[in-house]
Length: 193
Ligand code: SAH
Image (tube, rainbow, N blue to C red; front, side, top):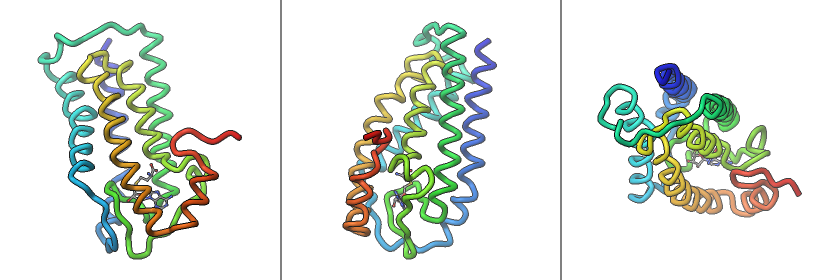
């Protein structure tokens, strides 16, 4: 039965790649005016790639990680699939709304515009919120401490390093406009009051 859930995990990654690819292509035609990339941020990205891609592929295609397997009920697995589907949806929507301002790195482009519309009117970091949903779903879909669960702490390390640097550069670029936006809109959880 695991192969069905493994296939779903791979399909979700393929969907993410299809969503991102056109944005990656466009990005290379734009000029970067300010970069906030730090070694810590790069390390975060490498760790994330390991626990989101490499370890899951090892779990799916080899038996090296079997010693770290655990059990998940079918209901838990289905819940995982639902949360992962929501994650892919938010990922798609945030790429659509961020448009030409997207970058996988912390940087400002020459014609960078502050986006506060669409899903960016609900949370300031919907792409990272979608990643958060993903890491919650992952341990249910890939029931293994290394291929499933490890991505939760890795995400938190990545998130806190990344968001600090990213909000710093946004404040430098957009000043009061970004400060106002921060007051009104929550980081990854919507502000209800
Ligand atoms: N943190 C956002 C964006 C991730 S992509 C999210 O989770 O959805 C990272 C790039 O987006 C960074 O280079 C940053 O310059 C840019 N960025 C982040 N928030 C933005 C916003 N509100 N408007 C425009 N660009 C933004």
